[in-house]
Image (tube, rainbow, N blue to C red; front, side):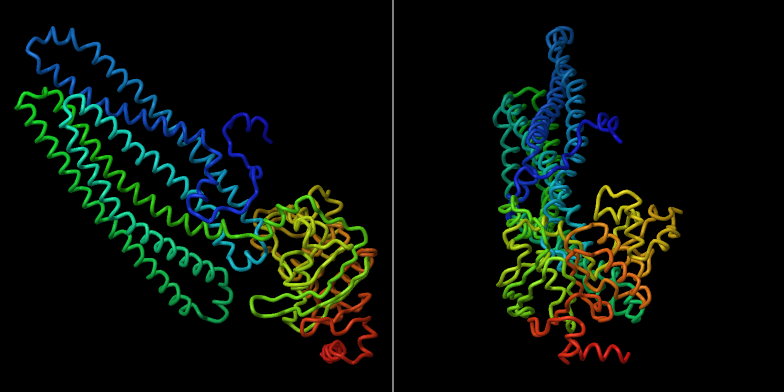
Length: 610
């Protein structure tokens, strides 16, 4: 696809990895500098063009002054003969050069800054976020993450654009105006200088207040978005328990909080705009009065007054525009601060991966060992000196009551968490010294979360093996006993079979069907180690039996770790480990554990009765 298309769009954002991979700066300036530092050429041209456009705009007032001076001459012919080259030069600047400069400024802003720079910043934000530890995604909602990954770079770009388009423009226009006014009489610069001092003092007074209020508004907005996402994401629970009114109350509270924060911010902005209006009026009136007095004293010509008034009027008008831009800058900076907390969150895995990127896991036998492993969630201990040795090619079942750390054990094996103490090895390689992505690349997993991407079945399966052909896809679906379901599956766009889209998080499929598709994806990976975490919990007994028979035949020689509450799914395991109080308390075959008459036997007899 796409060769002609790429030629057509010569200026595209780079979507490759960052040049340097390091923890993101935790300061606002450092964070913004990191995201913008690749685009020095764009900002050089925008600053240069901003200065030139401001200077060209100031020439409009010069032209008006020259024209007024011309028409006020008694000897019109002589005046024209003297003035026309100067007027022609000004007309060329205003009528030809100025539109070209404005076009160039818009070109760089609208074709380079807005699409290209923003896209690159969003890519870098996504790149860093997606490499966060699993715990990061457990504590932040997907909607919140997506919002800030998209919104924060856009806010940074708007801040940069406003600084160049408004603040820089006003500074350059003011500087050009001072030079032009001083060329007529230095006294004409006094009203503009006094206005500038007043303008700066006004900004120093109001900006800190607006910054605080903008931060509060952004935080209130973020809380509102999180609450709305939470309610919409759990709508089935809301409907089943009939708690719509309760959710209304919580949404009303955060909505009122956002309303108050926004009202306070807008009140400060109103004060700012009103104060600036008085300041601008004073500039225009004092310039006119001073110009008239200087003219009456014979110190300046009428054309200087005619030039001064449009110059200061444009400066005053620009000051009002800049006021809105400054308000927008601080509102956007508030959003950047909120987004930065998420995008630049410290990431231990990223640092480990950076320093150990050359160390990739090499699986030869699939031998796994847990040695005196301790792990806690905060102050809540889960594993307490657990040791377990799993031979290469062995099928091991893991059993225990809810919350004893069965899934935590596999999370540690996948380096989704780090142990507080102890060592975990695969084929005698300490996982703490290895690249996390390389470890997960060698292990196939069916987790309790059986969500699918909102894509075609084919694309969901190819997550495990990128270039797998359809024959391999159907083979894995047959092993998971779901090929007949997929063959007749049709989505709302009439796409069928492997082309059918699964809907959001796989909503087009039932829980059991979704679980078997996820299992098929894991089998397609053909790794040496397979983890099954409640992989058949949503299946009926007969389907579970067929799936387990296929698994036993297909996983010969693979190391398999299977976690299940339904013990019938573990009878084919070579050994079964029972976890209790953070340790392995029982270990043996199904028959051996029944003879021990321990926890496993009690659980088995209890399930057999039901």
